Image 1 (tube, rainbow, N blue to C red):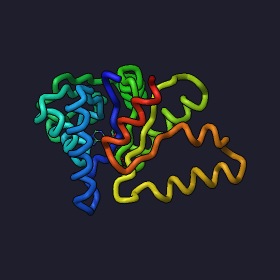
Image 2: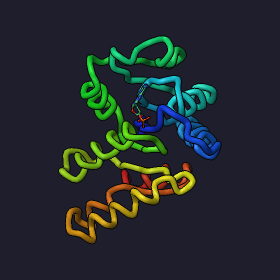
Image 3: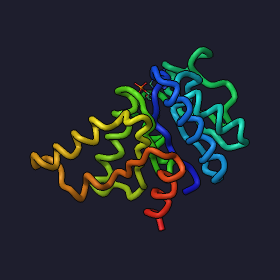
Image 4: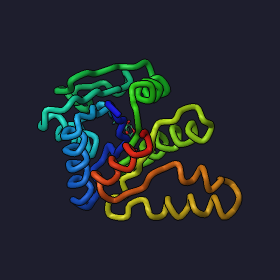
Length: 181
Ligand code: AMP
């Protein structure tokens, strides 16, 4: 895996744990020479992980749609920046560039991005690993809901197991890496 798309909050959340683990994730990516692809913002956990990878001499690619590309939102120090026409083009670009996907805690934007690549994996449209960093148990309800989908017959167990869930950035990356071997 040379590049990973990280989906995460444009906000930082209330607990400092969210920023701490976004920083840890950034360090792990830089240390393993894995480029970060992300939404291009300087705000929230997005800005936090981008800053960390850059501080540790890693490569950061931002992909932002024109309507969000303003000096207040766009990170001004990225290694590369792609400006797309709209949100679907942005997600497609991030998807094409990435060798794997990780969701950190975030809001509806993060969930939408995560579930799109999860859906495409279920449909065998790609074979790239998908990880979820369950910082501070943030995704516990979502994990329970995915199990509920299986129990109620709306998702196969096999497909539910396609996402790798860990609460430690290093372990998450190792497990994703193992899947690609
Ligand atoms: P959310 O989880 O709702 O905060 O949305 C974060 C995700 O949606 C990120 O992974 C971005 O790709 C995208 N996104 C949402 N808001 C912004 C923003 N203001 N600037 C850049 N990207 C954003």
